[in-house]
Length: 207
Image 1 (cartoon, rainbow, N blue to C red):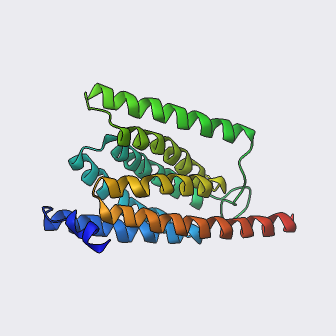
Image 2 (image 1 turned 180 degrees about the vertical axis):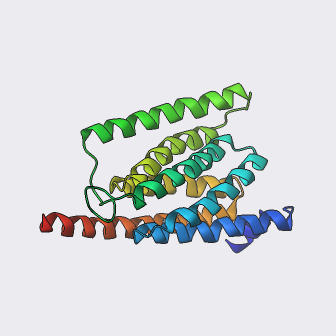
């Protein structure tokens, strides 16, 4: 297993490895902060996503690059939402999605899938099986990020599903560090879901 990860970096520059390691560390920090409802989820996340956009552009993975570009934009939006006072409360509360938000989530997913597919076609990229998986995961992650920005507990369910999809995908592509990162993301997302559910249940009891 260790040899598998190391082989992927034999012909990779030191700069690339350092940047990927920074993404690895700050990506995990971002999820840990999100789990605790800590606003630092966004500054740490921005460092990870901005560097990821560059790395994925170099690698030619347009779907993943778009995801991280979107994450960057949504991080600023989420940062604003999480710090904005809502109806006299100090922070945006954790809630479940209503029917309208579920509909928006489905629309985001399908629009994302069609847009990412269209971009692959526009740039005349050969779409292989792993690219279709990438496109599908893009739709899941786009929706998850929007739900997270609005503190909807369903964001964690989508992160778990998406992380489980891309963990083997990145391993297959030889991006060992990113594969390991998303495996850790999966575990952290499960714990985060349980913690947010506990907070949600407690807030409902106080109503």
